[in-house]
Every structure is written in structure tokens, then in C-alpha cells.
Image (tube, rainbow, N blue to C red):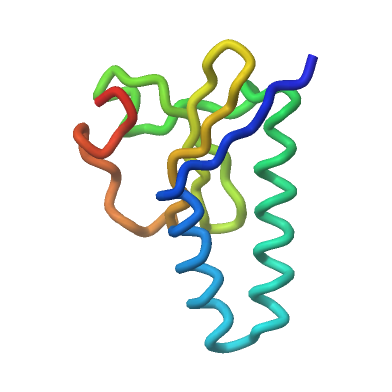
Length: 104
């Protein structure tokens, strides 16, 4: 059975920021990147537990998973039949702090 996927406003804002940054050099590359990451997010409908826990989540004792899309981390939680996307962050950014994690 497929899960529903919900994207928080914060994650949408981060997606828009990353897309705008990429578009400075190439609007077409930005469009392709955005389409591809949205396909990856939608793929979480099926087998969302296939990706591991985010390293900072384990240390904080919070169940946040991460899926990589190139250099970007898609941070999400899985509850019953819903996958919630909480953030889309470039991999070189500092790890999230406890208060920035869902339930942290």
C-alpha cells in the first residue's frame, strides 16, 4: 500500500531557494533538477523506510530519515501511512541541531 507524501512549507521554501540558486547559472538545469528531486520525493510513497536515519537524528534520538539527491539531503519522517518532508538541505551545510529536528 502506498503512503501519502506531505511536504512542509519549510521544505518547499528550501526547494525554491535551491532552485533559484541553480537558476542563476542555468534556468534549464534548475528546472530539470527540481523535476528530478520532486520525482524522488514522490518515490517515497513506496518503501519509505528504505533510506537510513539522518546522522544528527540518531544522536538526538529523533526518527528523521534522509534520502540523498545528488548533494542534497531530503529529510523526512514516516508516521503510519504518511511521509512528511521536513527539509531539503545541501549536504555541506552544518547538521541540524536538536531544536531544528521534528520532535527534537
